[in-house]
Amino acid sequence: GARHAAPGTGAPGTGSTALEPAAPRALALLRRALARTYADWDRLESGDPYDHTRAELLALFLRSSWYRRRPGRGPLAALPARVRLVLVLRLHEGVPEEQVAALLGLSVDRVRLLCARGVHLVLHPPDPGAAP
Image 1 (cartoon, rainbow, N blue to C red):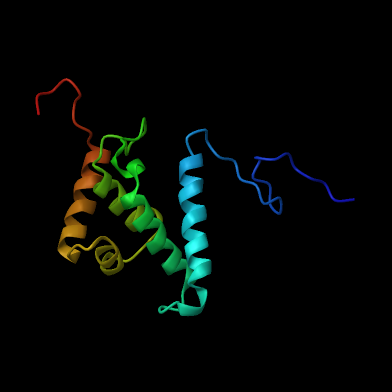
Image 2 (tube, one colour):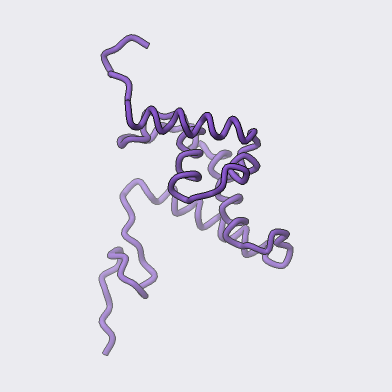
């Protein structure tokens, strides 16, 4: 018979993922974005449901109180939320600068600047004891 992995292990075909304790909020945002994409399925202008879902997820994130909260730890924790978004979209998701600019309502030059600033801050974090 088929072997079943324990829930939360992220094993292929189980429909479950290994989520960190802080991830339920992210999962809730993702579910809402996917539900909106499903509801808009017949009206998708771009024809790409992934792009539509990403735009919905971004809009939900920007409107949520989660956006205003600082993440607890990690290399992105000290960055402003908009810089974190630009870094994730550009470097992790591979979204082109023009698309990030359109999603965030910024100029392409501003996206480049935020990305460069974020990369610099991640690679060269300020000394916590230094004056601002």
